[in-house]
Image (cartoon, rainbow over all chains, first blue to last red; front, top):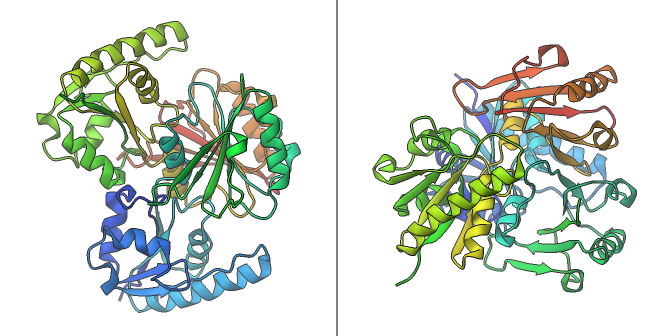
Length: 233
Length: 233
């Protein structure tokens, strides 16, 4: 009577063809799929995986919705609840695939659940996925870093004084309400001859790319990244 | 009479199952495969892709060896030669898959060739792959960044004064002879309560992981990454 295993599965940035062979196999082999969202109809991760995993919608799909908040206490409670729900399945000897857009080790809910399930004494594994910033750079046809250059992945909420001295390419992720400071900084970068790009919904039918500060969309949504490269830096 | 297309294909960090569906399809559809190495027998990218792409070794395999040097002029000449060789194939209406370990937009030879082929007026596309640092974090069972944390990808050759003020997780890649400074810095991190990991040959049969500065292998090879996380940072 072995317990089930929790797999935190990265399904890549959006294009269903960017799932790895391993992601497809693991999701196929799991009876239970946990997804980040309110309903499987509206869940992007389900829409992506559903296109390449045979019999996806015949599986037991469990909603693991996390509210869009920075209230840590509320988030922790939510992760606890999700872990309890999934523990029930694992103790019933069912394997669970927890879907995550991009890669499970970067800004994912999945990792919170992974840790809790490990603490409860179950086995949990992480299946790497393609990062959304890699797909954004590929869509733009640019390198993130070459030779001795650096790459920095930074949330939009990062204070500007922590950003100014960074050398190399900066990718801003997780846009929120705090965009004003960043826009001032990006304008500065451009004034000095640097380049500012945005990529929204990378790999999806409504992918949108811009170059130059004047083109930055007013509505920077959750699925938007900003990339910037300074001159001689 | 259309020219061929050059695909820069990321094949992920090492585990053949971490190729994406797209990478497998594109390599399968290309008559010509260009690989980074002296011979296909010794080329790790070929060994990885060869395990999951049917008929891989029946394709025309072209060696694109780049010397391990930081001599920019010598490197540039080498990229020029590779671009010329591949142009011949493209102008003969053959599609070419240029294999690259990890993702083509991060520290890849592929991008140098991509740019040259575009400048010659051909079509070139990039197929994203799983980054090796994602696989390293997954193997360690740790997050690279959560919530408002930052992630920094830095070559070993980066001056320590540029590293000291970085907040969040640091991943050191591209180890060379210049490791002494980094070791001093890592010891500092550990003394302050931070954690230092290394992962070598991630996803390959000889994968090796260490935790703690005392465990760092003496022979940090090309396929080794160092990850470090400070306390309260």
